[in-house]
Image 1 (cartoon, rainbow, N blue to C red):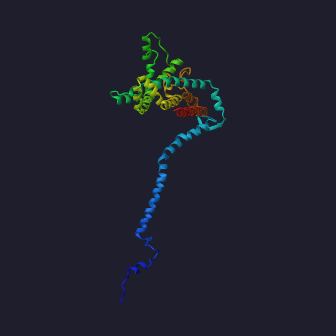
Image 2 (image 1 turned 90 degrees about the vertical axis):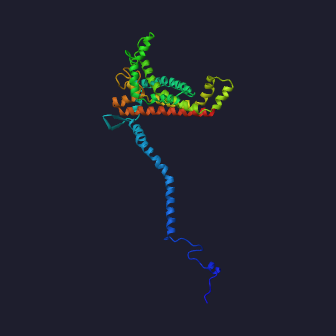
Image 3 (image 1 turned 180 degrees about the horizontal axis):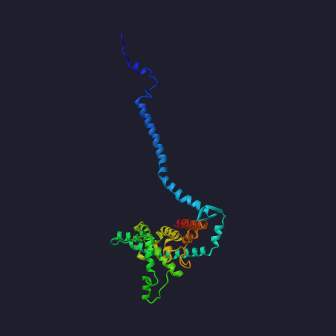
Amino acid sequence: MTRMATRSDIAASPVKGGAAPGRTPGSPAGKEDRRRAKLSRRWQRDARWSPYAFVSPFFLLFAAFGLFPLIYTGWASLHQVELTAPTDMNWVGLKNYTRIFDDDFFWNAAQNTLTIGVISTVPQLMIAMGIAHILNYKLRASTFWRVAMLAPYATSIAAATLVFVLLFGRDYGMINWALGAVGIDPIGWQDDKWPGQIAVSTIIIWRWTGYNALIYLAAMQAIPQDLYESAALDGASRWRQFLHVTLPSLRPTILFTVVVSTIGASQVFGEPLLFDPNKGASGGAEHQFQTLGLYLYEQGWVNQHLGRASAIAWTMFAILIVIGIINQLISRRLRASS
């Protein structure tokens, strides 16, 4: 007689390939497992390397248009290179550096850069602070005024400078007309040293004051209102609130704008170039407002000494590094004191 299989017989029967049923490699379930494993490995590779792919365009562009020109300029500064034959390079070592340091025009340009930087930076930041303080209060059409502050920054350097050339004209300029109305003789803004530097600084002040004002305004709006309310309860006036609440809270922002403005002042180029009546790189007939940027341009593209111009560029780069180090030291001291 045929005996029916009991539950114990079924449980005791061995299974091929192990104690538990498995998926054969050729089965649809096995293919699905392999596909999922492959997708998992692909996802891991994508999560690991895709961020580098996203930022690689920046590094490629920086290497092509930033790092390579910097290294090549440093190499060219150690050679005698002329604009007419840029591939003919004769090794001269540090001669280009010693030559520019012995050049009186270099020191004149460095002094002009310093004075123009001081004359333009100090009033610019003070005016920007005052404008930001006014805009920080609730005003009608506040958005309009904030956008208007950026209008000079968005204006072309060439257009702005040409307008100021007309304003500072000796015979028909509006500035001399206003001075003549109060009994002051006409001033040769483009002919004399200090008037020329003041005029160039005025262009820089007009163009960058609104930009710095918006930076100060953003920092002011981040100051907690509780500090102003506590100062008001203590009887502090608005002026004392500005001195004892606003300014201490803006110290990092003020330091940032000072450093950025100083770096920008060391690279002034378009304003003195276009303010010169002859539109040359000499910065006036007697180099009275020639900056380091104009001196570099004159040596490289007027006198066609690319090696000397490269040495000037690296000297300016070293000056910026010194400014950055000073900024870092001051920042550390401010953080330690706070």
